[in-house]
Image (cartoon, rainbow, N blue to C red):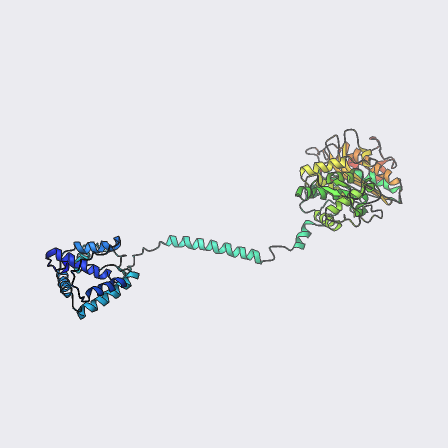
Length: 543
């Protein structure tokens, strides 16, 4: 008798049943099914069937079966065991309808499970025990397919907000709204932001009259001049010199850079600038050096449009010659090289750019019309504007201290010294620039005296063509100014004594006060009393 038909009792029966069921499940392969069907068919030779060894199973498949072997025997497993024994006893006959249907289902399920392995089912008793021993799930745990039930949210008891907190919040809100509103108003209101033309008018105000009012914005030199007084003591000394030569038109303006006292003779009248126009060009160049737009060691290439006749020797250099900016600027001032001046004008952007720069400084009468040489005298300026420009440079307003010192050093090396330098005494220094064309001659600069006084002065004379009397008149006026300022050490140094009221003196006749009008350097004994020459208006008197 085959081992399948031997009676099995107890747990041995259960184990054999489980193994048989597993064999049925594993026999879903087509070859295995055909082999088993062939084994069930009746054969002519009766042979005793050999027990077939169960196929080896993988570890993942053997573990569920091992758990089933170890499971206790239940009525359900006993019933399935009896069914299996009944089916196995029918070796030679057809399988029952129930067994065939079960085999079909098993074969179909095994084929499906070969592609999609399913998790083996646990026995009902085991599932019940597992459910009893399973830990309780919390609020957030939920099984697959079971929707999570939301617990109703309970409202917290909110404490009432203190009134002080409300006030603080309102204050912060008000400050923020106010800041936003103020910014919007400042952006949208055109009255707060003046137009560009109005701004330019403020910074480029017109120069005032000889009374000392300067329209140079907030210029320190203009403020100094506004506080100063007119040096009326020079009027009876200089005016008679000009009356002898009716065909010469002088222009003079000087300002004491310590006190702001000034003297003007046709100071605001327009004159041809000649080579004195090179002074504002030099200042504009060093402004660009301070701004980093120009380097003193960069090379300037001589072009044909730069060549200018007249003074200077750079006009004879080959086209394409290179000069540094510092070398070109030095030649422009020291030897009044016209070619060097034209090269600087081109480097700074041209005539229109420079004229705009002059206007920004407040120079309304100073401007370029043509390149150098301007023999026709179309480039214009005035004695007052040139003197105030020199005052601003001395005060360090337009240039840095380094650029100011370098510019004044270049002007101190001017070769032509036949005009203002002739008036200087021993120990004096001058930084100046001359100008000389057929219709005009002039000189402008800053003079430092041995007594510590510094003043800016510009003397210009319109003349008949190349008339040498104009140079002589400039030398006479320059000497008179120097002697006058050299005697009045410290400017207005004499103060009326306490308790004594100053006497009002009548206006003095210039002829009676000056004596000999033709003497450009009158002796001290022939000079009029300053108390008679100056009207006493209660201010400090000049000695």
